[in-house]
Length: 227
Image 1 (cartoon, helix red, strand yellow):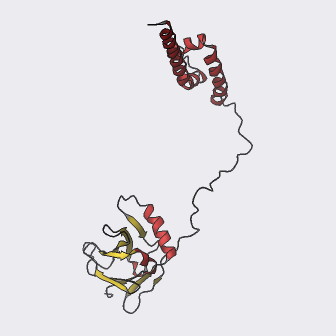
Image 2 (image 1 turned 60 degrees about the vertical axis):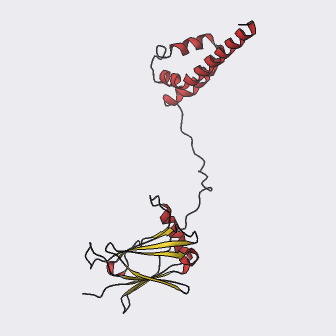
Image 3 (image 1 turned 180 degrees about the vertical axis):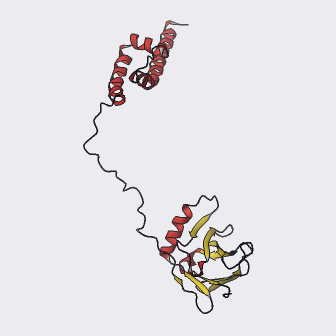
């Protein structure tokens, strides 16, 4: 090995020794601040600090900051600047709910969508812990007339990105909880109409509903006659 190679190797070892020492500074300083005797655990670091003035000076600067903190000698500030939260997207003051009409003579429960409602439904969907392509969700904060349980979910279509699948979950307290089938549901938007009935689980799904028509979507649920 040449003299130049020997000098280069020694220089690299010295650099690594400094880096390893600096990486252990925080833990070593914390142990000293807690009144422990870390020289035994950090014997190599203690020896390095004795022999290296540069690292010793850096460590003493760190220790001067750590000791007052651990010993409670830092007085609290008289005031703190307010947090700048301007980067956060402001949430609407209140989320609109879908207007619903009282049950009419035909015992229909009607929900009319709007652009404002879709915004709140989009926010509600993003808060759901689902992995599927859920775009919108509507679940009334208060039960509609007749204590009807209702949830409306709109999923992205697997076949057409311009469409969505509208799924309604209807829970009628007057029906068997294990058989919620037979409730007629109708969707209207523009000149288009979709109709169907709930399954035993109370579900009714309508595929390929154009997303650009959602803001004018009207949902009609035909409730059973009163017993």
